[in-house]
Image (cartoon, rainbow, N blue to C red; front, side, top):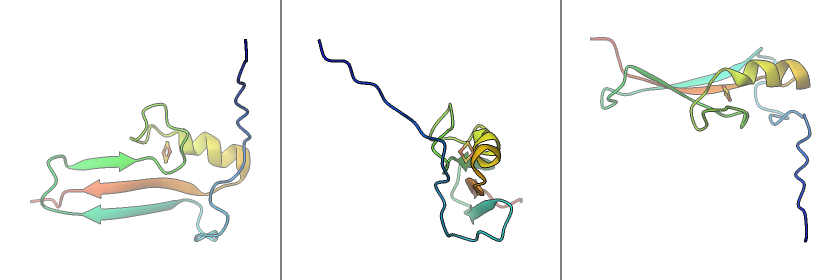
Length: 77
Ligand code: FES
């Protein structure tokens, strides 16, 4: 029987985008959204992927990375 073992290395996934910022977070605002705020994971570490669960904080600390979520926001009325 063949056994497959996955090895996940802790390394930064953002090698060059806005590296002078502590955390790269982008927002899209649209009145067509049904929820006031949704955060999508871009670090691939979330336990609730595709939604952000805050795991990027641990990832960034462990790797020196600066990745953060994509926020979808409904404008305040
Ligand atoms: Fe991945 Fe927040 S958990 S960006």
